[in-house]
Image (cartoon, rainbow over all chains, first blue to last red):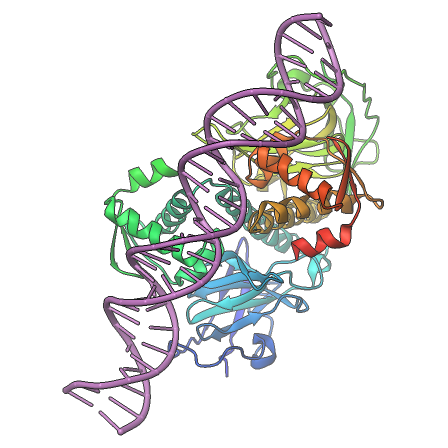
Length: 247
Length: 247
DNA sequence: CGAAGTGTTGATTATAGTCAAACGGTGTGG
DNA sequence: CCACACCGTTTGACTATAATCAACACTTCG
């Protein structure tokens, strides 16, 4: 089902070799599939030639597929090679809270406890590397480089979580959306932002409803702050004014 | 101004020796004072007798005093020995967003960048230990124990930030307050919670107004979910029902 | 006692949520 | 090829919730 290859840890960067990515059809038909590591099996894991301490498995997921579920035992943490992943939690009243969107190069699924506190799903077809991780015990004394590496990752996860909390602390829907668009826009150098996720995803991330997201974007367009050539493609016409809304 | 003493790092716990805490009057008069490390100077720093890699300074702050400001150069991270500290940010429209309340044993001020992204202030009179920290470079290869220690701290900061984001994702004021009270209540074993912070602090933490906080607590009391013997003392009369509101 | 800070309550308004309908692409099957 | 259904999205009308503006109560402290 999934292609498997070797990856390795090097200094503060996690590198995957021979990713073996195969394209997948958009619009995955089914709701759920077996967790990644079950589906992919364990074949192909080996220490790399350069003797780096941690090897990873390259895995592919179709759009909408679950990578792991809330409550699953933690076996690995993950790095996004391509595509976008969301981490989220479901509340008992049926709502979904999206903790974050994780794009290329970003880490998700890092936990200290024994089980995942959130589930992770592919927003688009995506390729991720799973790094075996048995919690803090993996940070044995002899592997200081690895400790530093993983520490760095933990800190960037921490800072993203903190920024998300501050984003959610914004007063109005307009402020939240402006901050969201600028965050996405900031990743590329031009002012074109394309949204990998649906309005529902955005709403669940910003703690708004889909209607409010849609209305606010339409208002931004009427105010010439953005252009919406299509619903998933946003052009920041006036980033300065957007920034003014935010801070 | 501040008493100074030695502290040290040991395994995953940061321990302060000879804290030399002196009580201070509640209700600090002035708005701000010089940052801790300026006020306290550098005297008293030394390697401990047991040869632990990191020594800390014990510092005391009166209620309302600033520990560091947003934008300050990072010299240290901090552990709360007693009292409560808040970390927060101010938005250009004058609002304040509280990132978190940090009680006894908790860490704050850990950053990867060169400057603090938030400011920290004493909610009550408090005693904190400042651990010198020059960022990732401090995690040199020979200090694996320290790397593991600091990694553990980073992860707990991360998890708290993530929980805060999910808390802010709650729909209603009642849900936010119920989650907040249960979080505070969970720290002790009984159902008595005393609030170190003002209604304004709570409002800024939950992204609500002071009036909504007050009204919601009054409503909880009318519904026999809590008792409010005084405004800063809450008794959770029906924690099960509160939990039901949250999840 | 009076002043200042903190907290509560009431009346009104602004904002976003809810319910509902319609629009626009995309893919399918006749 | 077109008709159709489906999904994500947009828009409208109405409502619920919390913000705002305002007044008042309670504590602490000088």
